[in-house]
Amino acid sequence: MTVHVRTTINAEPQEFLCEPGETLLEALRSRLGLTGTKEGCATGDCGACSVLLDGRLVPACLVLAAEVSGREVLTVEGVATGDTLHPVQQKFLEHAALQCGVCTPGFVVAAKALLDHNDDPTEEQVRYWLAGNLCRCTGYDKIVRAVLDAAADMRGVTV
Image (cartoon, rainbow, N blue to C red; front, side):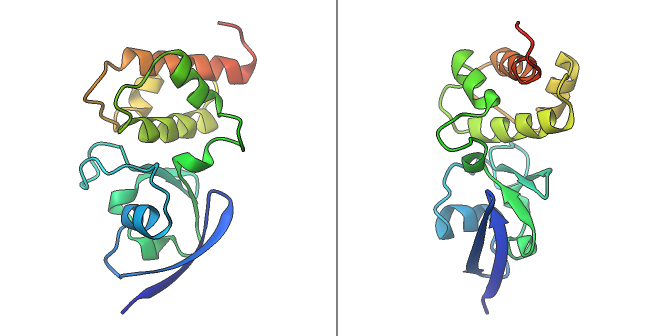
């Protein structure tokens, strides 16, 4: 038995069919071609699949695709505006806050969620908000600095 889902993903109406036990991560990647959201652990522990569901940060591997019917989902593909990168994305590039890239989409979405909630976070707050995201390639300092710099940029403060 398949489930018919009507939702909004990255500000665009979407409809798809899925299996009752299919995760949002599986549907995003295999049914909708949104491969920016990565699978790291499939247990909700690494943050690689982080998306915003109705503005709340969630691991897409722990949400059933059928649960997003009538709701809004934002993936990493929806963070930029057209060809213009979001300040978090731009600062990740400028600070070289990525290596292999598997964790980067989750960090970007989590950082956006933080900055949507608090445009002037402390380093401690950034580290807290990003604690659910694991990186196996690089240290976290460049990531934290990129988020702090993006926050300052978004407030119009020169660092």
